[in-house]
Image (cartoon, rainbow, N blue to C red; front, top):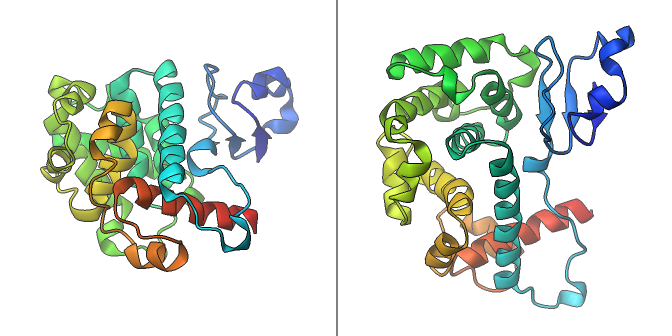
Length: 264
């Protein structure tokens, strides 16, 4: 395994010409840059989507400002989305982010690598054809990238790939970014995903974590004061100070929990 800040570190450090790196099986970087990844289909793991800023928890039991933390969460997500949009067209960014979100916590890295190996432009035809291409790409990944143990059948990546195939087959004709631009409310966003079988809490999480940051500050202002999603409310309420009564405070509470984890 080789680690760099960005993929271009592979070239800058002369690894292309050094046979000692022929046995590397995984390239790990903090964030992407315009450099094309190394040859021979070496898997690339980008850490940035899975890292969250760590700061010390509030001292002495001082009540946390969940609204401020929620605004920090959105600013961070939006900044990452803007960096992605500087490198790739909007449709490609949405495709990758949705696919990664469908990986849940266990298979996000594998889904990110699948998106790299199976770019949106390569997925043509109807839903079964797209699913076959995605399944073939998934099967070509190193087996160690996939974590299938203790994954509920409803969350199995093969099932999620079928859902992604149906979504692309129905939504890509008009363009993913254009389709999202016409769906500016959470019910409209989740219904768009639900038509492909991506339902319930997962559709809401994708809408909030992917669609809203993609659309930007105006979309955030429209939904930030709305009711929080139903996901893990007990954990959030039990471990944070103050009621979780809005989307903004929900993400503020999650950010607080992650900061505590990173500060341990």
